[in-house]
Image (cartoon, rainbow, N blue to C red; front, side, top):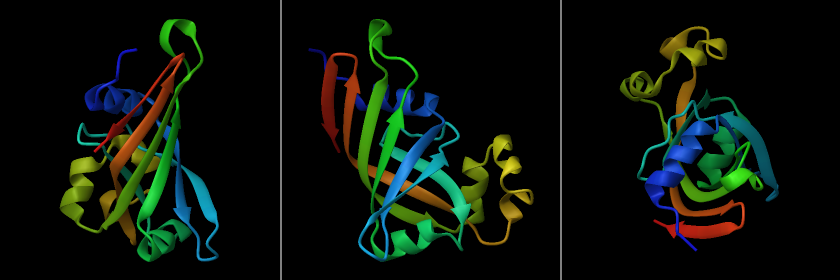
Amino acid sequence: MRQMTLSELSKSMRSIDFCMLSTHAASGDIAGRPMSNNGDVEYEGDSYFFTLETTHTVEDIERDPKVALSFTGSKGMLGQRPLFIAVEGKAELIRDKGAFEAHWTKELDRWFEQGIETPGLLIVKVHATRITYWDGTEEGEVTL
């Protein structure tokens, strides 16, 4: 059984636009919501998501930065079951316009009409600490 590398997993994560971001709600429950990574995933295991300061996502992360991401690809190896990727990590809230420019893509204009000047805009950066995957009959884990 061949182990996927962090580089291969990052490439796969970039090709899956939407994932579920799970946080710890004020009640202690798990809160999940769909987020677009806009293909912005780095080989170090970092994923970037734009959101607004006023969301529950931000409140949850400020309270507890431990988060999870789940990705599902449309197909797996050799036409087998789809690729599934589960990421555990620590979220960081970034409020720097220089970072906004570095991670902005034209597709984000649909959600944030004023671009990087959108009031309350921020980036949720998730730094992976552990990535588990299932690809057809193959499965593995990368600990960072």
